[in-house]
Amino acid sequence: MSARGTASESVDVVVIGAGLAGLTAARDLIKAGLSCIILEARDRVGGKTWSQELPDSKGTVDLGAAWINDVNQTQVYGLAKQYNAEFIEQNTTGNCAIQDASEKISTFPYGGLPPFDSAAAEDVVRIRDMCEADCQALDVFNPKDDTLDVMTFEEYLTSRGASKTSMSTATVWTRAMLGQEPRDLSALYFLNYCKSGGGLLQMRSDRKGGGQHLRVRQGMQLFSKGLASDMPESVVRLSSSVSAIKNNTGNGAIEVHTNVQVIQARKVITTVPTPALKGVTFTPDLPAGKRTWIESTTYGYYTKAMMVFRTPFWIHKGFCGLTQSFVGPAGVIRDTSSPADDKHILTCFLGGEPGFAWATLSDKDREQSLLKQIGQLFGAEDLAAKEFVQLVTYEWIKDEYSGWGCPCTGLPPGVLSKLGSSSLRKPWLDVHFAGTETAGEWKGYMEGAVRSGERAAKEVIICLGT
Ligand SMILES: Cc1cc2nc3c(=O)[nH]c(=O)nc-3n(C[C@H](O)[C@H](O)[C@H](O)COP(=O)(O)OP(=O)(O)OC[C@H]3O[C@@H](n4cnc5c(N)ncnc54)[C@H](O)[C@@H]3O)c2cc1C
Image (spheres, rainbow, N blue to C red):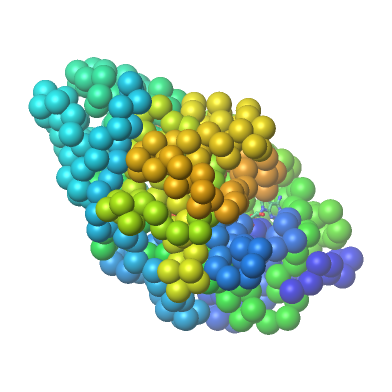
């Protein structure tokens, strides 16, 4: 990998972004015999996968993506096998804890229902099953339903008579999945996001086939590092931020301008997240539909705070580590320990409003607020404080190249149904669009990123007739 190229170069294809979408696209292009350069703004590969060793060099934490599965995430699982990932199965043995709106804490076995009163429990099941049925009715590649896209997810829930407890439960979903509140998202967008991961239940599950089933001991950046190191020398150009794409002819002559050079290409694949794409100048400008989409996407607040402990005291007390809270600061907590490294970690998901509030605290207060919540949830306030080692975190909301947020953008009402989901991924002149947001299946996830990269590479290979 190099940080600088020559002043002016010419290749078949420039790929923008060395995340999973860009790297898999480039892999397939090179395999098809095309010359290719990947321009990456950061000084590392991996994009929203970023793994860091803990200070004592024993164990890795994922500041970005952390889970895959081996059932329906075939492409990313293939990469995991290719690069000799050591899997850690998510622990679902034991109790979960839930903190309700009055901060009362109750426990229940993993896979069961929280012990709400019977009317509340019945309504949570009704709303959950309704969301599941409505999302399953959508076509992920072409989700069209004007009635769902005129309202927010909150309005959808209200119009279906969701109780307060059901609304709070659904808020845990949107915060944990997108860092947003139900009122921020189009009902169609959120339900389609669920469908893209196989459905709400599959996406929320930590069991086999679910969205949070397997972690990788070496960290998820393993795949990007592996893909990059398998590329011929000088394909990946780090610290090369693309500022402009000039496609004046639409005739196989396209100029890509970076902070260091201009590259001529026959085709470009961009994998830049849409909020960051606003910083790239297109000549001529993008068509109205794409421009509207890019200007409409939103992020909320979404940060993972990894709390490292000396011992897994929650396991000793009969918990699996999964918790939910209607009040926060963490909406969801999951065990992300690596027993082989003797590392005992609870990953706290700070999402939506409670996340924004947590972010205003000093570092010390952030730590203390999470320790207090963990102690309360597991009935172990003294132990949590005594066993605590350190907090490791990264705020993607401060990261220019993710577009100031993560894990995936949302859309308000009125965009998706009107523009159609293909308008984002449709090629424009000689520019092709990849990145997890453009995926049909597992949009917002690593699997979606890989599939989008493969799809865009296929489009280019067909166009260039190799
Ligand atoms: C905290 C967090 C938790 C997550 N959890 C999970 C999970 O458990 N499971 C899962 O499957 N997914 C998860 N995700 C989502 C997953 O990480 C992403 O869907 C996936 O990595 C996106 O890959 P991508 O290639 O589409 O985009 P990115 O990884 O964002 O790659 C785009 C690349 O483009 C580069 N770039 C941006 N602008 C420019 C420019 N102007 N010029 C050049 N380069 C540019 C960026 O630096 C970046 O490297 C999580 C993400 C985060 C942040």
